[in-house]
Structures are given as C-alpha cells and as structure tokens.
Length: 543
Image (cartoon, rainbow, N blue to C red; front, side, top):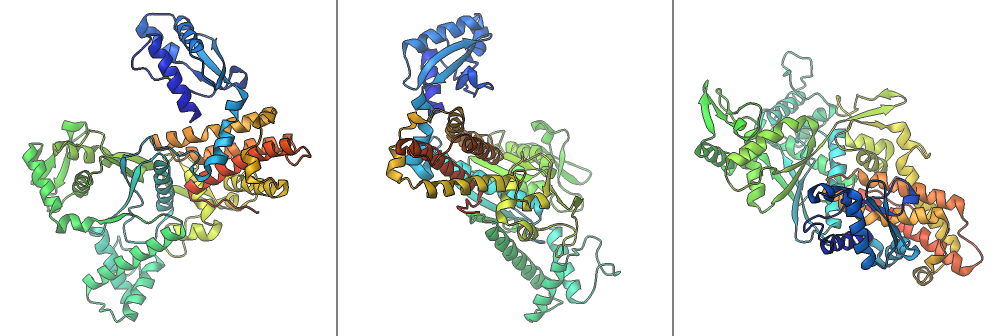
C-alpha cells in the first residue's frame, strides 16, 4: 500500500524529469533509521545510461519530487554517491495501524495479480508408505505458498500427482503379499527392494481380514494403494493442508494414451534418435549436458517421459503458470523435462514450469539424530512429528528456513517455551496482546478513532514501521516463491512488539493515550494473526 504509492510517485517524477521512460525504482528500508524511512538507488542505476554523475541525477529527481509533493512525505534528501532517502510524516508512519484495524483479515492482501491462474503441485508422494518429513516440509511450503498467492488475487489450483505406476507399486504389492503369507524381511523370498515397515504388516493383515485372496496380486496392489492414499489424506488433513483440487494419477497418462502421444510428438519434432536399441531425446539441443534415453533397449519408458506428458496436460488445461514443489534430489529432472516440453514445439515457454526445491529434514532429539520410525522403519513420518510436537510447531518450523537450505528439526526446541522457540515466541506475542486488549477495555470504535499522533516513542514508531512492511512482504514472498520470508517477518514483528511493550505502559489513565497505544497493540495482533493463518498455524488468545 504505502510502498506501492511511493513507487508510483517516484516513477512519475522520473518520467517528468526525462530521466527514463521505463525505469521503476526499488524502495528499501535504510539499514540505519536516521537515514529516513525509505531509500532508493535509482539515481545510481540511471546515471550510466544517461552519461551523468549519480548525484546530478539524484539532484534532478529530488527537484522534481519537491515540485510535486506527496502528502505522506516530510523530507527528501540525497546521501552518499546518490542515494535518495525519504522521510515520512508522523501520520504516514502510523497509517498501517489504522489500515490493519479497518481492514482486519483483508489487511495485507492485494488484487494486483487478479486474473492470474496458478497451479501449484506439491507433496505428490508415491502411495507406497506413510508421508515422511520430506513430504511434511513440502506440504507446509506448498500450502503456505498457495495461501500467499491467493493474498495477491491469484486463482490457485492445488494438485497432487500420484506416482501409481511403475516398479515401486509392484514392489509394494509384492511386499504386502509376502507379509500376508508370513514371509519376513531377511527371508530368501524377500525382494532386495521390498518395503520393510510395520505398515506393510498392517496392510497385509487388514487385507486378509476382509477376505482378500493372497494369490491375487492385482487385488493386493489396488487395496494397498487405496489404503496408503487414504492414510496420506488423513495425515494431510491433520496437518491442516487444504483439500487438493485435483489428484492426478500417473497411470492415467498410460491408459489415456498421453505418453504414447507425447512420444509420437517428440519423434515428429526431429529431436529424437535411436542408438544401441534405445530411443533418445536430444536434450542437448535445449541446454542439457547430455542427451537422455526415452525408451530403454529392454523396453519401457524412462521416468522423465511421463513427466513431460504430465506437464503437457498442465499446459493444455490452461495453466500457463505452474510451480512444482519437489525435493532437491529432483534437480536433475528440471532441464530434461523443460527440454522435452520445448521439443514438443507446443508454444510452451522455456522456463516452464517453475520449481521450488526443498532439502530433506533431519530430526534431532536429546542432541541425537532420530532415524528409526515405529511404523515406517527407515524414516520419521509426518504423523509422528505431529504427535511429538503438534501441528503448529511442525508447520512453522518447516517453513522457517529457505526451502533449499539444510534443515534440522529439533524436537526439544519445538517443545520448549522460550524465546529460542520461534513459533512459541510469535504465538506468545499474540496471546500477550490479547491479554492487553482485554485489560485495556477499549472499544473497537475507540480504537479506530484513536489519535495515533500521540504515539511518539521510537519503539512505537519502529513497530508501526514493521507493520507497514506486511503488504509488501506478502507480495515479495508470493512473487519470489519464498514462503520462508513470512515466519521470519513474524518473528521480527513479535520482537518489535516485545520491545515496545517493555518501553511504554499501554494501560494508562489518559483515555486518548490509552486508545492510541492499544490501537497499536491491536494492529500488531491483527498482523500476527493474519500471518499465522497463512502459515496454517493457530493464533492463541491465551497461553
């Protein structure tokens, strides 16, 4: 809101000063508060193409800004080699407080991207076992990103891709069959890549109890996949993930003939060749480091072929913007999938689709890594994480770091009631404010009518400035596919409030001053609650 208005003001001045017809300035918060409320380096950027000294450009721009004053701005100054600093007047500094109280749940949202249709594919777990911590991180990242995109006016389509075809499903069926027959891992009959978790025993037992034929491998396959899909759905519901709009089955790509159609299209493009009995795609034509096998000499397509077919369906369904959230182990597939889409010559842009890659999660408890699961055997499940620390902590923690950074989930930290626990720290700030609001007993009408000019303390100004950053923060996090920016920001808001709370009493005798200070606290609670809701985390009123 405020930031966008200032950018429009600056952009208009740049045009009027004949400095550029296309340049749009970037605004940032100065590292030192004494430099003002906003700063831009646009003069330095424009100097070289104009053949002028940066300070000369800054002087021209400042003169134009001074000639068309902005009601929010009290001073424009030039610093250093040509930075332009902007200082806001007191009313503008606290405008976010009034906006948050007036707009409520809608504060921070925008319609800037209304009309954009975005598909986000996430989780997409093979139906071969319970969801693990990697799936949990992907679910938290994906659901939060979808929420962020919706705050910008986007129409978001959530999709889950089920890899229900291929060797892993055959291995699942065979593993369940053997356990139903009483064969255990380690037996000579047990396949090397069989699934060993206790959940396989549970499925086999349940299959027999319902009268299933232990010799009917197809029936076992269908039953096991359905059981695990239902279990994954229950875990995601417990995790607070919104219902997916589509569950797309990999098997349908074969039954509907889409894989064959895609292969035929790639052959027709002239970007394939045969060698050593195999069919290859010339992915090097599109930036790959080497060509890739499409169909093996022994028969059967390699895994990236159905991926290409699947993404063709995304494009054909009208999703010109697609974000895939996957583990960093999928990094190698990006180039070849995009190469396959380019080779199809279907008008699909080069960077399609976008990817948000995440690293896996290490779980620590008592200073030691936890590797053994009660049910899955070789990995910790989402259900176990929720059981140990609760949904809120799991969701907040798993989004709190940049997606592709290594992440260690510390169970002890997630359970601690201390400043070091980020979700507790933020939730406690909200609960503390709710307590303040109950004690202050100021009506909503009085809060909205409060004279915010009475807020003169530097800590109050710092808190209000942080609240004003919320709309731009949401826009940036959505644009850059960076959901981790939100929990980081919420910690900063909580810290700013705790600092203000320690500096000034809110429940004072003067009713006007009490209303102003309470209004600042109420606006802070609103921002914390709105942000936590986007993360899928509760905002308790008492702790």
